[in-house]
Length: 325
Ligand SMILES: [Zn+2]
Image (cartoon, rainbow, N blue to C red; front, side, top):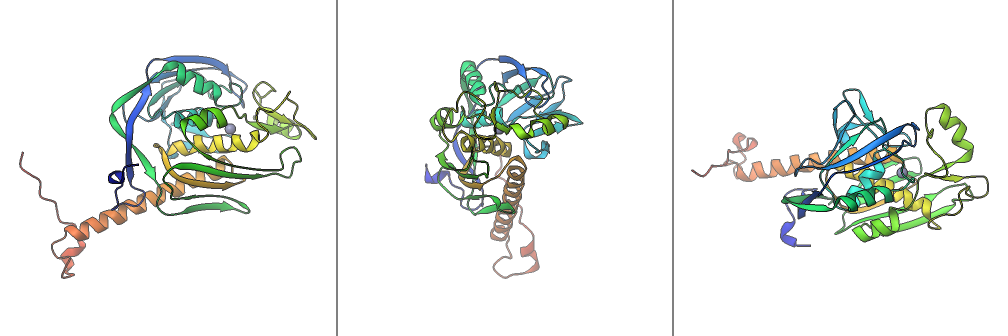
């Protein structure tokens, strides 16, 4: 990492990395929503720099994938605008984050993304099939430079400064099939594609009835989820012995991309979920805004002519001189 890319005046300041990217060509897939059980067509199209990941519902409503548009984080991350909702965006968001795709137009014909096989591998395949294009605008990562923590009982997520993007996760579940699973992954593209993307979402057989009555998991099956029975999983096998904790990390990679740019920091989590992930996003954004205000105040003080004498004028930022064109 080039030291010159740091902006020391600004906490949580943007760090310029390489160029923004989008996909080369349009790709589509059809499937069913995990929770709604409804058929849905998903189309990914190239988008210009600084578009971010932009969802477009069947009626044309545009929903930017950012923290402000999270309308529900119960069991899945749901985005919404003007009363229109798109559910379960996190695995596509994870694939875009993992593959460094900053800009995408995402058309969804129904209210939920297709479940695919319950993992992010299908979305990775779509993005790889679409090809990638670098855009002539630099990507600005969000570098964490002071610890931020959110917690609820014994669950927590904290993010601390680091030169890379790493997630360390402890999943401590009292169900004997899951138990204690710990993993720490530096989220490079290769690690994401090989170690995280194939990890499937999971649910407990004992919860299926109640979830379906509440409009959840209606499209769920052994084809798109690991189903945990009393003493074993009902699927033929697991893709990794610790598939559960890997999926939790995958979800975090997806939810964190709702910050709108890649994160540089070490995320340490214990028994989190989409709701706590969302609280972390809000906390990071508040800290970023506070850091920006502090930097502006510092700059204002430095620029103010009365700063040295502490006069009233020093409270006001001087207007920087603009060079004549
Ligand atoms: Zn998930």
